[in-house]
Image 1 (cartoon, rainbow, N blue to C red):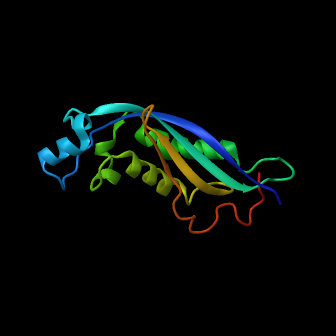
Image 2 (image 1 turned 30 degrees about the vertical axis):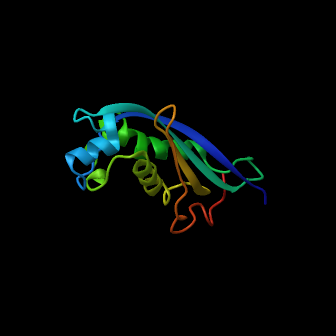
Length: 149
C-alpha cells in the first residue's frame, strides 16, 4: 500500500504571559523580555496537524478529514480560542512557551486521531516563531484494524 501524509491548518487567538515561578522577577524579565509583561499579550496561533498512513485505494484519502476537523475543533480550538493560556490547567506548572504548547497539543490529539497516525504538530505563533513537535507514537495506532476512509 502507498503511504502519504496530509496536513490540516487550524487557527485560534489566545493570550499568555511568559513567566516561570522557578525564576526571580529579574530573571523572568531578562529571559522573556517584553513577553513577561504582567498584562500578557496575544497571538493569532496557526496549528498544523499532520496525519500519515496508508492511502485508501477506494477513496484516495489517508484519514477522515471531517472527523479530524471535528476532533481538532472540539479538543484544541474550542479549548484555547480567546482564552488566557496561563489559566489553562495544563499550564499550572509549565510556562506557556510555544514549545510547551505544541507538545500539549500533540498529547491532546495523539491517541484520538480517527484514521492514520499523528506524525507531527506545528504551531506558528508569530511571523518569526514556528514550533514543531513529533512525539512518541500513539499507545495503539488509531484506525488500526478499521477500514480506512
